[in-house]
Image (cartoon, rainbow, N blue to C red; front, side):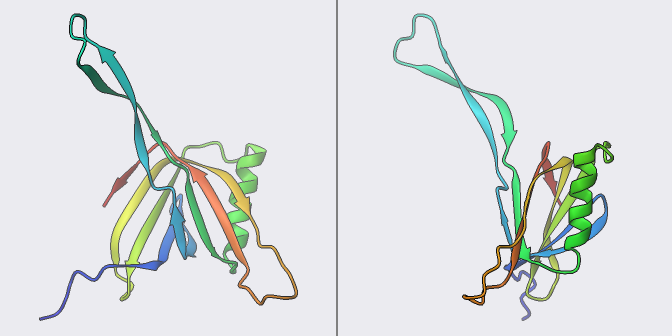
Length: 144
């Protein structure tokens, strides 16, 4: 019987920004959300403290990949935002793939804007793959 539930291959994440394919990434970090915890001491009850959810905040998403041809498009979008030319609300999507290149899950982000871009460091010794790291903030996500 075939296995239709192949797990996500942790080495491949396809990413789009505003519907434009910006390529595949090999690492994703920061997909997190957390509520601020508020405490409330009820009058007359000294042995109990209520814990209530406060504000919701989201971690920034950090994407890493080897430098490739689509690096230029990512850099252009980053510069447009820095110059104030890209002022509309941006969206992004990250598709996690299994070994058969089938999308297992997609995270869709709203209110996206770039936080940082770090290009590769080069050295003659070592023979490492040149990587770039792109980080963006967002106002939340939904899965599909």
